[in-house]
Structures are given as C-alpha cells and as structure tokens.
Amino acid sequence: MHYYSFNIGDYQSHTSHLSDIEDLVYRRLLDWYYLHEAPIPLDEAEVSRQIRMRTHTESIAIVLREYFEYTENGWIHHRANKEIAKADDKSEKAKASANARWNKKDANALPPQSDSNATHNTLPKTQDTKHIKDKTQRGSRLANDFSIPADWILFCEQERPELNTAKTFNQFKDYWIAQPGQKGVKLDWAATWRNWVRNTTQKLVSADIIRTTVPPSKLPDPALEKIKADEKKAAPMPDHIRQAMEVLRKKA
Image (cartoon, rainbow, N blue to C red):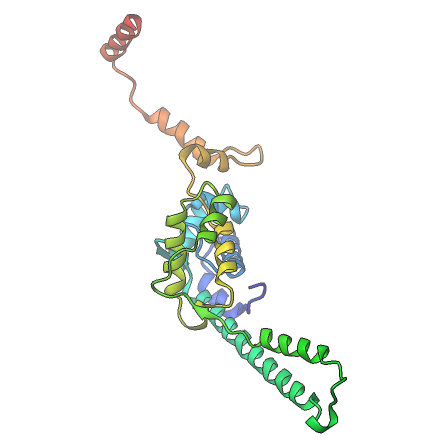
C-alpha cells in the first residue's frame, strides 16, 4: 500500500504517553508495515536499519511490545491488517465495477450480424476480446497442499543465496494461508513470492549486529558504553589465577 487513512484523534488517544523518539518510531514502523504489507522483522537491529533509527533500538523494542503482536514470522499489527484487507476488498470491488462497464460498452459496440461482411477487418475486435479477458482475471488463495515449484527455488537461490529456501517458503506459505478474506487472495503468486524473497531479512550474527549498531555520528554508542561500564563493575582477577595463567602461557 502506498496510501492509508490516518485518524489523528484516534492516534493521539493511544500514543499521548510516548516520548518524541517513541512516537517517531511508531510512525515509521506503521509506514513500513503498510508499504510492505508484511510483518515487522524479529531482528531489532535490522528493524532499526530499515526505519533509519539505528541508535534507538531500546525505543523500537518498547513500541513493538506495546503496539504489535509477536509471531514466529515477525511482529504483526491487527489494526493495520484490517485496513489492508479493507483496501484490498475495495480495490477488488472497483475492479469488478470497471470490468462490468467495459463488458457493457463492448457489447453495445458490436454491430448486428446483418451489418457485417466477409471483408471486414476483425483484428480490432480480437484485440478487444483479449483485453476484456485479461481484465476479468480473478485472484486465488494459496492451497494448503501447495508445494514450492522448481522455478521458485531457482529464483530464491539466485536472488538471495544467503537464505534458506525451504525455511523461507514455509514462512511464506504459513503467512499467506493464515490471512483472512481478500488479504489472502493474490492474482500472481509467483510475483508475490519474488517480492517476499526480496524483502525477507536474514537474522544477523553478533558481528553484523555490532556493525549495524555503530552510530553514524560521533556520539557514543550506547551498546559499547554499556560494555565498558560492565567491565568497570567486574571483580578483578585473583592473583593466584593470574599467576597460574602466566605459567600456562610460558609452557605454551
């Protein structure tokens, strides 16, 4: 979705207790959710990178726990899901109405049989028929017994070789089968799969998390400052242990 309705009064009544940073985090998370129509990634470091707030992981965690629900596929927002489903339903109705108008217009444009002749060029009529057929295509839901096609596997391995294809497909399948109503209906499931692969975030290892949490400015990194503070609080190493380690080092 590239547009969603925003109720200022409703938002204020539920967020007046948030700090300025937490409020900004919530707005950016909502924008990301509506744009991608997918759960917020579970990795908070990756989320902070996606919404351009790398030094505010604590605020992100607070907002996620308060306004989103944790699932194995990511953080979901029930109100946003309803709005997305409503928009999809409205789009389908508008498409059906447009198809009805096109069908009626085309039927009225057809000449009576007696007015046609063998030399009449039927190419435009054939093109119109194809156009109407394309317009009336309807979406479908993903079947419970659906298995991953070979070309889907190939696309995932070529586009995102770092992903586990089987795990990614199981997450994709479980998510869309669980969607209610029109939210789970898609016209092109292959295209939906390609977008899912492109947008899937890989859980980062510790080294990657450190790199992504380094602040872009000269301000101190909260994570590194905490490590330094913990080192100061740690008890000093006893002399007998230090001496034993020195002996072992010399033997090595």
